[in-house]
Image 1 (cartoon, rainbow, N blue to C red):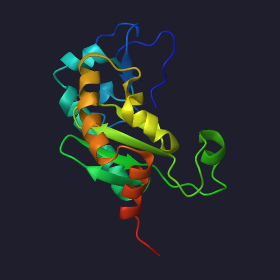
Image 2: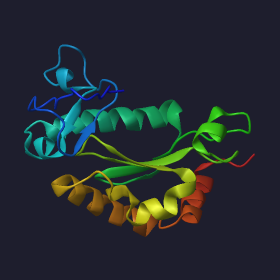
Image 3: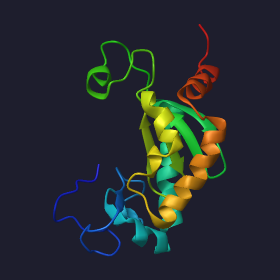
Length: 177
């Protein structure tokens, strides 16, 4: 996870984080790759918008997240051309997520949308999806990053407009015992 502090600077322009930014977590590229130095770093949204490597960089994080969901992280609920909707692990009554994140036993901790062309996730606690899907996802975004989020979330909202629809998507993916 990128460590952000008062003196942190944008990984692209090198200036202080004095305007809206996002930050990646982890490394999507090998150390010798051209884009490795931008991993696990904050970046101004306007710098990302103009950065010629944004789509390649973002695709690295997107592919890594998709692979993580396919193998261990949770469930992919819907895969579209430019984004996917997934949920994190289901918790039991003894999970720390129940206490610290307010997760309800038997439900996932969170839902998220990953965009293929932007290196951020649109993340919501599972139980807060109704508010999030309507406009809660806009917080902290602006400019073309916000436009991209609005476009994706308008598609997401047609498939999954409510927490009950989100639960139904998960139930359709979960094998019955």
